[in-house]
Length: 369
Image 1 (cartoon, rainbow, N blue to C red):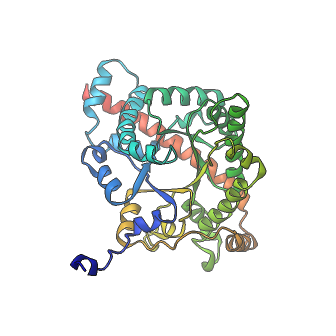
Image 2 (cartoon, rainbow, N blue to C red; image 1 turned 45 degrees about the horizontal axis):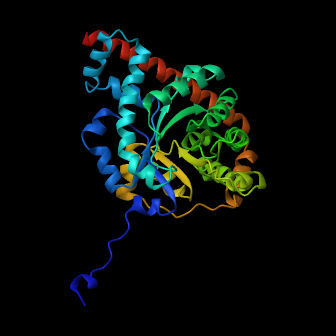
Image 3 (cartoon, rainbow, N blue to C red; image 1 turned 180 degrees about the horizontal axis):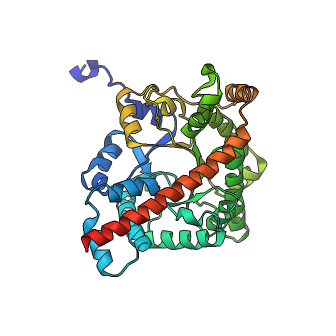
């Protein structure tokens, strides 16, 4: 017997344990420094990171927070590009490089994983036609198969999602808060796939449905008794998971799957905690489940790596989740009303970040000239 045969196995790291539930761990952040310092490559190699997401708030902090983008901004300003065009050039350059990091993962997963995400302008959220046009243009400019275009799952966004899926554009549906939001996004995805099948097109176009978690608890905690506080987000995830599994088991979806369609994965978003009294791993520890994604802020990823205790796969029957949500309703919380408010507030928050981003890029363009 060799000496190495007597050595104990190394324990599974927390990030590996969460990935072992069948969940993809994505980073909710991108900066040029993250790319150029080798940090993203280390996260991929050591922390089981297999994709990333971005939004206007993330790019606002990245571009305005230092001088990493100054040379490109100077070059683009000299060419006479406008502020919005300058932003998209900077963002697409970053996301192309990130997409190339995840390219081997994308290939190995048959196109299911290894994605990065770029959001259409939030100012187009109420304009279906303009959303479609910009999404098509951005995906073509990026020229990466593993790039999602993020489109809000609002009433105006869902028709755009259907059309974009039909056109073969991978979509990350964002700003989903409730089962009803999720089902509307899933319906748009399925209709897009059904149209492709009817047109004789390949039935696989990748998509994720991004469900925001922690904002539920910030919105409801003050109205709830102590025993229900900070439990609504995870319970809503349980309700939505049950709906997604029911949908995947339906005859309608099975008919598409038989032709080669692949499920629209649920993505848990907004999984960082803001309250210092709460564990930084509160949500990520609880939300492991097969065929899902968890996109987490960098701080949360590092906390998971150092102190996380993933609980294993989530319950799939929704029983415990429904009991908690019923108790919240009994306590006077109108879940449907709050879901609608959260989606509107999320849209408005991204609008504000977008406007702030455009102002700061304009200021930077002036300063580097």
